[in-house]
Image 1 (cartoon, rainbow, N blue to C red):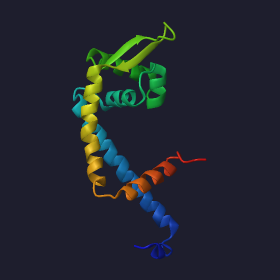
Image 2 (tube, rainbow, N blue to C red):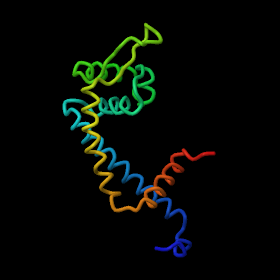
Image 3 (cartoon, one colour):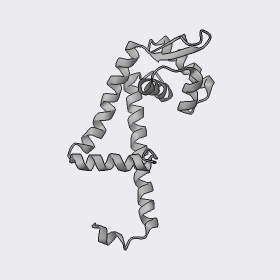
Image 4 (cartoon, one colour):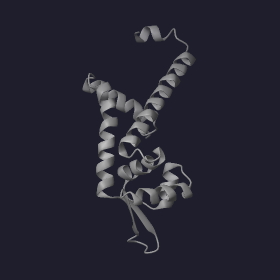
Length: 153
């Protein structure tokens, strides 16, 4: 379809199609997250993988910040962190800034396991864009940034 033909399509129809495509993306991403979580450690709930994934992306933090940023309640985060610690994936150490606070971070084992799990997940997306020209990929990234509100001036 070319841009001239788009004028004849009601905007509402295009918005519905966008919604369908976003739902497909979210569903595919969820399925990949579940598979990556199982690859990380099949004995853990996907929520524990979400914590590990967050720590991998953003670094050490305290339980309150982790709960807020992952949209989990503090008791769930505490339980999952204890489980992750017992398996050797995370450390809980006194905060260097405040001796009373606890900082949660990934161990070397946790880093290696999350890297391995994410490689498989990322390969699915890389396969989908492997035929794209750099310009197409760049345009897609820019549109996603704008959609996600990162290009606000």
